Length: 622
Image (cartoon, rainbow, N blue to C red; front, side, top):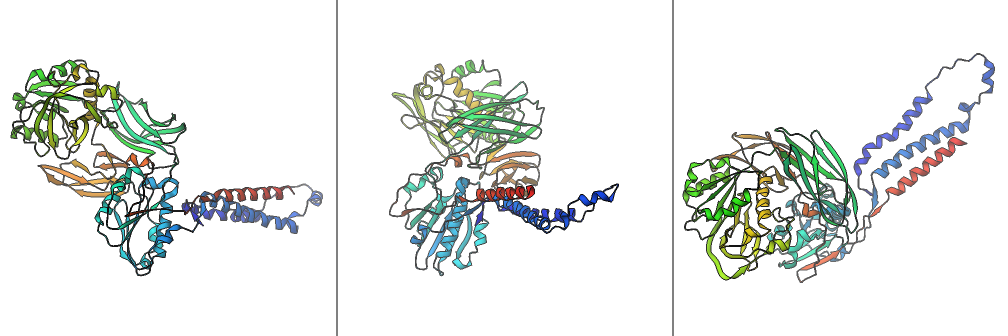
């Protein structure tokens, strides 16, 4: 028998409570005043009666048993079916074996991770004694290397825990493409993490032990962000997803340093956004906390940590060469009263302090020379944000480590936006019909490095690219009449507004597990406080600035770097438990394991506890 909640046994000392109370009351003498010995004759001599003494012992046993059964019920005991088809596929001779256990948090579903550990122990136990075993977790942790099965203790497997890091299964398998042995992958075959297996080729036979479920129920937090402040109140938006086919009532709680809000949401199947208001005047305070939904299927996507700082004044500089290129921007910005916007010709660029602006629109420059590159690079280093709008091939481009302009596409009909990242903040809530409406007559073709395409045309040329490491967005078409009719279409205002809001809300306060946090400090050593311990980190010089690099983002929570607070969250895509539809190939075999751990018998112990309670009531009545 095994237990899902073994920590419940910390309550076992409570079974001595009935015994302690029994002796305390047994030897406690109570003084009673009475007027005559005559009344003593009517008293029953129960204390000296054999049946009374036997009943006292029975009460003691029943009460001890009752507490024991309740503790066993809390520990959620279960029975394991030991027969498994895995034994049929294990090699009979000594071989080199690599065992990979998926420890991503999607494996929490239906206790798949506990099942996986039992399978791992079963495989090790039944391998040839002279085999050599290496064990990996998909979080890229090597547990054992080249050991004989007999040297691998069960406690090592038993103590393995779920990781919130992303899955590195693909990288691990690619490292051993020419491996001369057998590889076993124990996983739920989640489509998000294992879609690469459809085109995976290797010299070895990969045996996948499939623990995934075709039908599943789960809901979780997909995204969370703050909306622009109004009247010194915080407005936030949370995006939830319900993977089941039925409507759910979900309790949701917002925990802050000095506030606690609870609500109940009706969540239909699919994705739905909810807006909330936190009625609190901020002053200059930084607010940290978490959002949590109460849902039992998968805990990893039920919590989202946040760090919120009061908005600073958001100022925008629009730099241009030809004033005709910014006519539509001036008209649009004239009705957007939330920002301070300045316009400046590029020839006067050296007269301003660029770092005083939160966002730079660089519109249709003819070149990026060495001086301009130095200004832009320094601005990006100081966490500035740039939206570059191209309209011509650059005569000189010192940003060629990021992109190069090749030629201008023109004169071959019109282009329309055909593909875009629907889940990206910029394109959320924009309808496909609206996005596809504008026509484009001229587009700058690029050669780029380490840029992500957010939107592209129907001839596969990119329209919008993002350099996430440098806070740089690049539009490949100018917004003037000879390039496009977009400024006269419905798309133009929301696209530009959401692009600005994306950079306005995109702060360095929020990271995901596995990401590296880089911050600028002017001291040589930084104290880092994390959910799993405290560290002292040395800073280093990078491009003239003292920086700290922290890559140990392995648990969700609030991380503190001196006075700077950062939130770290799990990758919410792991909450999508959709299983990969994978067929067997020459180098790939799928084994559907039959070990069952659903035989939970906690209800049986609860029934016995109730039965014991009834016996005690019966004894009290007779």
